[in-house]
Amino acid sequence: MAQLAVNVDHIATLRQARGAKYPDPVTAAMAAETAGADGIVVHLREDRRHIQERDVRILREMVQTKLILEMVSTPEMLGIALDIKPNIVTLVPEKRAELTTEGGLDIITHFNSIKESVKHLQNGGIKVSIFIDPHLEQIKHAHKMGADMIEIHTGAFCDAITDIEQDKEFARIVDAAKIASKLKLGVNAGHGLGYHSIKRFKGLNEIDEFSIGHSIVARATISGMEQAVRDMLALIKAL
Ligand code: PXP
Image (tube, rainbow, N blue to C red; front, side, top):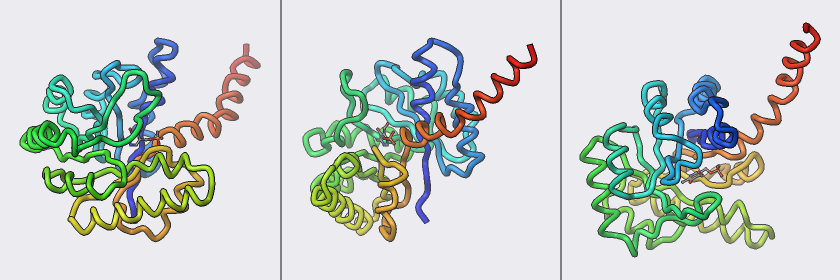
């Protein structure tokens, strides 16, 4: 059975929107673990728009499953990762203006520098995953540079509107997962996955773990709304 790693970035997005102390991504991570999550994911972005370095440090102390740090491959971020030591680093591309990670990392163009980062992290005892589009050549290069695992970018599949587009994009994911598995790479998948799109993955046993954030955080805000309103009403009634 595939595992689920829960990304709590958008709990921090909500906190940062108010510059408040809550909601706390660490508390959300604890709740996710209690519910059975197999890992906790956070993306420490260069612009620190949601998760802060302090969050990652506290999560390192608190997470009992495994902590997965998504980050861009820069000297600053490598230093932070080697200091905090998450269980896994997922190397991702990052653009300041993007709303979320757009596209996988191009490890053909950046082969030498990414390979060096992979080795550096692994020498520090951290496993390395690389977030790539489901393209054969990218997967071969991930294998060639000695990555422990890949994360297949599922965004194009999740964003596809027509059945034909969806089928085409899903076929790419299937091929990518099977090739990566043959190469003995760990195979994760994520980006844009929701309560409907996840059903398509039935039987694709090559995927070891799904990394899901937005849809889970979004559902949590709605499914928790009734109780949150009841709690406030009870306090108001008691005034
Ligand atoms: N995997 C990677 C590499 C990501 O950058 C993200 C988004 O932070 C996710 C998975 C989770 O995507 P979503 O929030 O759409 O579930």
